[in-house]
Amino acid sequence: MSNRQNRPIRVAVIGSGPAGVYASDALMKSGREVQIDLFEKMPAPFGLIRYGVAPDHPRIKGIVNALHRVLSKPELRLLSNVEFGTDLTVEDIKKHYDAVIFATGAVADRDLTVPGAELEGHFGAGEFVGFYDGNPLFERDWDLSAEKVAVIGVGNVALDVARILAKTGDELKVTEIPDNVHAALSKNQAREVHVFGRRGPAQAKFTPLELKELDHSPTIEVVVDPEDIQYDEASEALRRESKVVDQVATIIEKYAIREPKGAPHRLFIHFFESPVEILGEDGKVTGLRTERTEPDGNGNVVGTGTFRDWEVGAVYRAVGYRSEALPEVPFDTVTHVIPNEAGRVLNAEGAHLEGLYTTGWVKRGPVGLIGNTKGDANETVACLIEDHEAGRGDDPEAPGLDDIEETLRKKGVEFINWEGWQILDAHERALGEAEGRERKKVVEWDEMVARSRKE
Image (cartoon, rainbow, N blue to C red):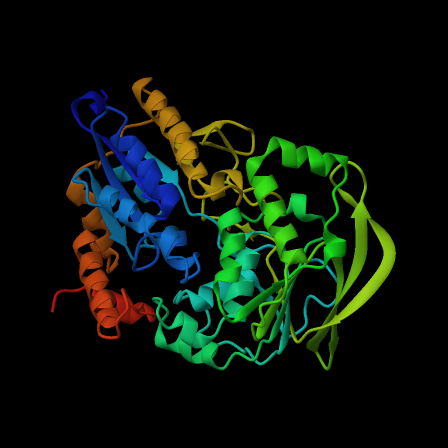
């Protein structure tokens, strides 16, 4: 006989980025008694906020304060340095929890399917973001010898990559970047950064604030060709319908007509240029070939048959992130999401796998801003609560608070709890304070684990 009415709902949340934390918050605000274990693969929490946001964006980093408040609540327990699929399995979840919410985000780069994509000097934007954000899973050093660089894509990640490449190491020294990142950026040779979009200003996915921030640096000259300021009827309609689209287009227009300010590094934003081939010699990038496009009247573009070769020594593709499959969890290899209906995980036959739910980018794809994730979480949690109250699914055989910790210990998992994160957090802040900064990140995985322990 079920005992679910006599105890809190036990939920495991996989992933401690905004999606996982917002789902946890929604559970705690549901009016039901809940006990949540928030599992994180990395030694430190916060996912995208810690490892996906450019270090010179303190405004967005401020979201960490709100996430901190959620993680400090007594109904929630953080268990970091625990990898789903190895340290924690679906079998473990079913044994200890009523439900699980997968909120693992998207960190891999989507592919760019053009000739030359295999050349040395072609990078995924996410790889570079992982480097400069001090993610222990990514490279410790970076080749920044190219004086001219191409960035493909017209979203905020493209702007982040372009801005970091166009700034100096000393400009970024005041942020939380670790020493190895500062050392690499200090040797950066980039003097020209070219950002390419195949459509026009009205279709750019920038946000106004990020676009304006490009001009805040005294070392960056933003350049837009006035000939790229084109709008067809559909684009004009977009501007009328969306305040954000109109703001972005207006900022771009101002860049196109203003007098140069004489900054040493030039950041070009090119519209109506569709990348068709990465050029190279001896296996290394030497250029990018684009085809000029033009508006088709419906907000899209068509090729004109006019091609141009741009001399660049490196190409970064910022064409979107994609999620990766989790062991024993259904995954759509075309859309790169967990198949679901309103957050309920579906099997190959389209039936709900009871007790399994998903939220965030692994649920809907890497679109929308961080705030969109809240709506996602509310939808998923509503389904979870509805299913639980309807008596769907089996009761876990070991739902006690200590049971999962005992399971992890038997496996030899060195999990880190909330107190451990606070110790590591204090250590990073102390490192930063010694240099007049708010924080300096610890990069090495083993050191992060060690620094999370009491002295």
